[in-house]
Image (cartoon, rainbow, N blue to C red; front, side):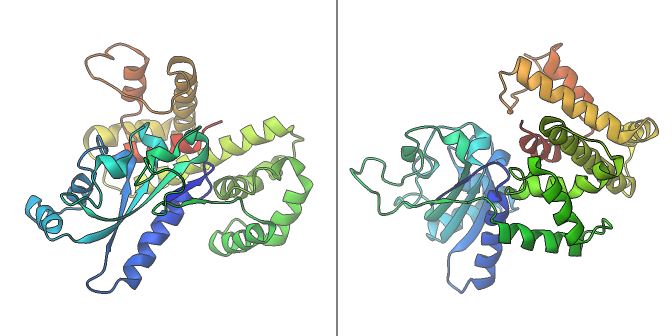
Length: 312
């Protein structure tokens, strides 16, 4: 099954929920649900399942035993668009072949990454003429008005921002520029987090400026929350020194400047490609080394997650 949708539509959240529900309903001997973040796997076109299980802490003996005993799985592959891959992972990893891992596969991908004639990259039988009965495509649609209202009420219940759902609703109605944003779950979260701060400023903004200010405020809040989280950890050595220096001089300000500089360099130096391939030897002295050195204190998975969400 191919799961598609716009960036921020909720594909990863749905995949996580699917894994959780499959575990809760699992009966022996049933298929094992296995969530795999494709971006975390090196060269996922080969030995994907073994690499993923190893990351889960299984030994080589356990992995080979599961494969030899033909244990069935439901593979939930998240983020095909993040690996810049063109291969059919179902075929290259020999899923459900006599000598391969046994199971079904769900794989998610951003709609805008697919392009034309993409089905052969996901179908179990791409050479079949006509419809492949073993393949299905599902698209996550934008939030409806009712879904947006439901999300808004749950957000207010779990986040103490000082605003009631009615006040949020009124603010959204007064900002027609936001209509196109809040049908997307992630962007709705951005708006709900940042709107109280922006409204307190009392400025009149254009549609473009409003989007820029929303992103800036959201990212600033993201860094402030992580500064608070890091302050509770026992950071020693270089990490502790860097964290204290950044905190004394404005942690969020430095973080925001870093991701802005990185975004500009990705656009101007990396042809807009949000994936960096850094080599300690080949990239010595260039812009990538400078940015990696500047950002080494950040957890790489948090940085990658943030950057994938900050596309224009």
